[in-house]
Image (cartoon, rainbow, N blue to C red):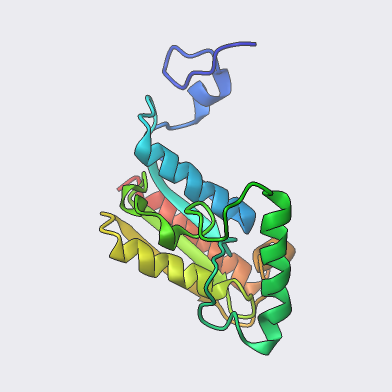
Length: 187
């Protein structure tokens, strides 16, 4: 197996020819948004040679927590909250609870060390995880993190709406906003 390198003399031809390691972004939908956040936390806590993580994009990020926030306790979301809480424990049987920092960033004492300067969070109005996305923005700002975070709510939409309707009005608006975020790293 070859060595992975992003340097000019690296062996990974496609990355060497087409990628810009000074403008790297991580992003994901739902659980992928959680993963993108946690990868950015690792970049902030561990030295990564050869790349600059400019930002992250979280679409309807799948975060959790022991305490109910926002509308999570509303009748229309009670079943979803119970189901996803059980899902966390089933998928990760070694959990000590739902407030571990990689599930609930609000409980992460090292959140200010997020390894990028730009964060774009999308939430969907009809998604029970919507309040977790807004909460993420709030706790990130309060943590002392030195960056810019924006949270956008897609009206009338469900969880990961853009996956199911990428050419819908809100899906296209999200892609345009994401493109602007990516292009801002070139100015």
